[in-house]
Length: 215
Ligand code: GRF
Image (tube, rainbow, N blue to C red; front, side, top):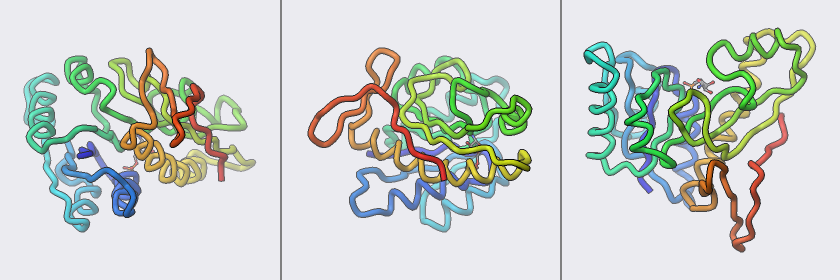
């Protein structure tokens, strides 16, 4: 299965996905990495791995729709079958999201539906939660909503700052995203209604999202 990855910055989740795809039994290949920011560090990570990259700078487009149309065109031209948002910091238009419905994943650094949006780690600390984590979900037009494929729980520790908590969650993200993508690529995670149904190698089904214990 051909995978397209959308990034805006650092690209550490992209790196985790590249490493997963390099495993001999992984049935997906990253065909294209697109950044909406010209200087994104993740572009160099993709290039070092020999993966085609493209910059589609949103600032050069008059509207969200025209930017998204260019994105869609590039993904389609590359034969992409599943899109992974990995630190992609643009809101996508409803038309793009519907076109890629059930074929687009996102990772968010909280246990959704808690703490959607930005500044999630500080908000988790301010709320006094003891457990947070990260979520991989299929993308829907509403931000940080959609059927959940997998979640990892991460403890909040005494003395945590937004930075230390973010770093602990990021480690979990790097384990969770490859794992969730593997389920989707293998056809072991399917959207039924607005939930993800997991089926194991024997075909046995479960409705609960996969839970990975925190580090
Ligand atoms: C990650 O924390 C991801 O969950 C969020 O943005 C960050 C991207 O980091 N959506 P990176 O670019 O993958 O290093």
